[in-house]
Length: 200
Image (cartoon, rainbow, N blue to C red; front, side, top):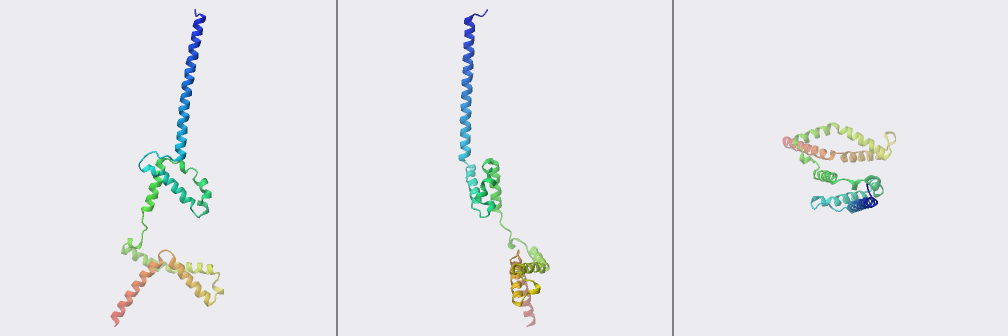
């Protein structure tokens, strides 16, 4: 049978083990709290995690946010910055690299000009321009009438000339019309030159 001394010794052992477990759990809890605190500080201060290309991620994020805050448009201004970009800093490195690649890809693409097209495409667009130019000019003419707030019934000669000049300006400005008008004028001048040579 267990004596009083044995029971006291057993109670003392259980108390020591409970205190040891409590101390171990407290140490683990302290270590976990310090790790969480370091992680929060790293996320808030944007400490770079690597020494190579990923070091520029904080520059990319800050540059993007600065570009948005410098916008003149109200929906992209600094007032709407927090509401529209509040999760931007929560993106992972992979997502930030994808944004950077898309940004670089967009800036590497050069706009396609007439010098990049072959002669067949240029001639095809010139013929299409001749075919649909009257529709484009009519649309520009109606737009000029709306801009000047004068219509067919109540136009004077001066207002009619003014509307036609505005319509020509709008028509030239639209798409690449001025370019194809120039090409057609060059062809017309060559034809006139050849006719002049053959007749003289």
